[in-house]
Image (tube, rainbow, N blue to C red; front, side, top):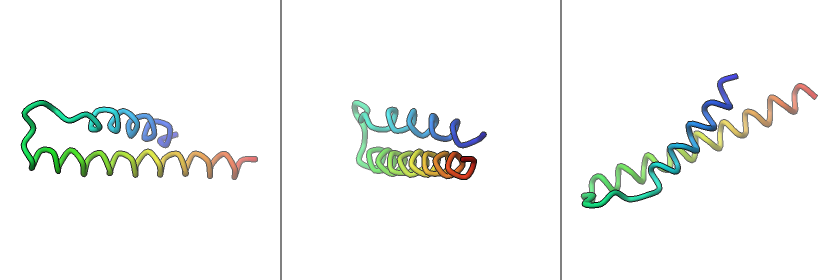
Length: 58
């Protein structure tokens, strides 16, 4: 039950962190990129887990 929420949250975070902010410093830019990558990994993991749950129920 948690995986769909994690997937949606990950996608929302990807969209949020994908766009650079105006007047963003280099440190903020690096932090935003690392959060973007973490959100991609979380969304991908949640998608994989949802697929595994569906496959195990078939």
